[in-house]
Length: 309
Image (tube, rainbow, N blue to C red; front, side, top):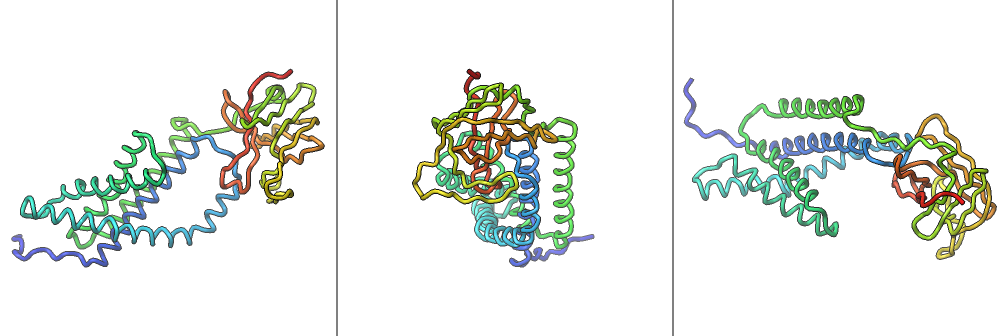
């Protein structure tokens, strides 16, 4: 079959924009799955099911917000990349060629990464390189598809993108199930592991003894955090008041049903502690309480600094 001598029609700007938004959303979904799997392998506090339930509840709102962001990125980054790659191709080669797209995307990504680093106050060289590479790849794919003249492209892009999301999730799940990716779990402590001195790194210490006694010195007692039943508590003292407390009392250890549910209950008359949870690693265990909303992962931690008296 002979090809027509007529030039192929360019896709309308609106359709190209929709295609770019679709690709960016698929890329963002893959990145979200990767970040979730990676997060499971990293040391983290136990936020329970509240954060997951809230995430599901807000999913429609997040989808709308993500679509708006993808649209802005398409107009502000993807389209300029396509346009500039076409200009450079015609200027230096007499025609548009595809390989100008990743070249221009690399330059645009370099600017984006530089701005992010400036706002963040610096970053390590390895993180900068990885960020530049991933940003370049994420920008190149929608830009290449933007300049494509293929008519029926939305369906295969959606199918391949969905397949990439599912494959990423399956590989992550298999990696965690087989132990190739090691899921983080708090260290399994016993009551015999607690005696000794634990410090908050700011002058405050808690010293446990094997007979169930405890001495607290300058421990923050007004965290505005969540108690054992995840009920928010508000600071009682005036702003700027010294909320550190000291005193002697007792402690108990509750192993719970697993490492995530371990609790240490410290009772000191002059302090109003909530229960302490176990975190850290086998070689560096911690005791922590939440400061404010558990989803913020802002913790008040105690680390072991020495043996008991």
